[in-house]
Length: 433
Ligand SMILES: Cc1cc2nc3c(=O)[nH]c(=O)nc-3n(C[C@H](O)[C@H](O)[C@H](O)COP(=O)(O)OP(=O)(O)OC[C@H]3O[C@@H](n4cnc5c(N)ncnc54)[C@H](O)[C@@H]3O)c2cc1C
Image 1 (cartoon, rainbow, N blue to C red):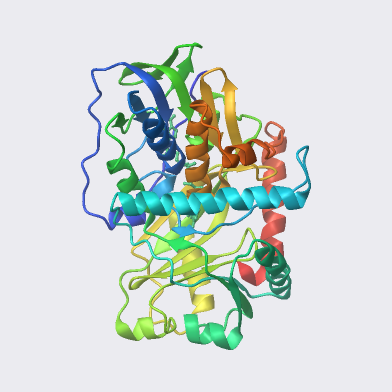
Image 2 (tube, rainbow, N blue to C red; image 1 turned 90 degrees about the horizontal axis):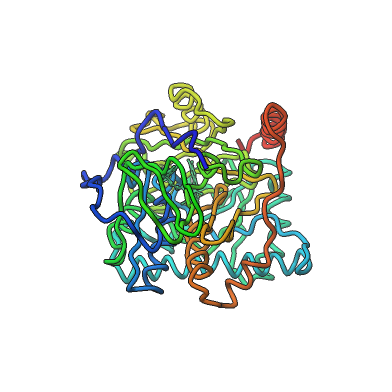
């Protein structure tokens, strides 16, 4: 399997830039043979390594990442850990309702597991669960969509509170949104701090090597992972490099990469903070895929929006787009400057299902966690390690009953289809964008 690309971002990750310098682990170990090798040290890969090491404490595991911890996609997100259930559908194992119930159990288990890992390892990542997360709608279609989703929250026994325009004005300081649904089951985090904390507290039988891309995975039975720092041999190999699995010829016809963008303001003064509602922290999520996310975090505003197919847009254009979206929502702020603007490429499958399982004997893959991958990636990583260690559980049984991603055509059809779909969704989003 030959590699064709590794991640490359034109600007550094804003969240990571706010943290103190960290010693990057780049010294190639003299040991060349491992019981397991994990490709990719994002949420998925680190969960695989942690769980495999726990289940097999006498085995040695190597984790490779092409980038530095904190600079990959896992450090570049908005840090909203919501137990979203994506597109339930009937399949060979039951109805759409059963699919939704399985997906709900899986993602909620992800939140519980990650909370325990953070707590037990004293990971400082600004983890909070009592700041509101509101799915807020600015259009009639958006309002209808949020209202329709309430029944499924009730079914999942997830507590929520409806918010009208006046509530939202008090809470978050803007009249932009007509209606919102405040959820109570989630966590908000500083994503670069979380991924760094996860990497720095791996069990002792895990070795991490950064700035080292897997260029190819060769052989079977005993795999050779080819890197610029030499080859490593693994009995089991886990591919957890998400959107870049395609560079190892995996999920080639199952996934596209969509870039989306985030920005953080400088610390705001008290007058500016007063314009952002009375709560110290909050997160606003859009009801539609092409909408805009915002967070009030410490004394800053985060805004995430904009999409591009397969490659990054110019960061100057993104800066101006995000400024205008911020202005639309908060027309009286004295400034719409950002201290950091960045992008990240998310692996998206056509039916939003993950790529998960043993591709062939000893070669395991989890990829395509879409835009809600902190929880989904973490729990899929944990379950993939359990699958490889033959550790049965009802949750793993749930996961094995989910559908896989659908085939998508090669270029140029794929690109034409994806761009047309994004344009349509963008048009439909209207003021949610
Ligand atoms: C702007 C933005 C905002 C987002 N907001 C949220 C949010 O609020 N909540 C949420 O849940 N999700 C969010 N996401 C999505 C989330 O970041 C991803 O779903 C998540 O990072 C997926 O984790 P992962 O470990 O599967 O993949 P990744 O985080 O992509 O990790 C894969 C790792 O593999 C490495 N790699 C790639 N190729 C190779 C190779 N050949 N060899 C070795 N290593 C390799 C990469 O460097 C990377 O570190 C957002 C994404 C973006 C871009």
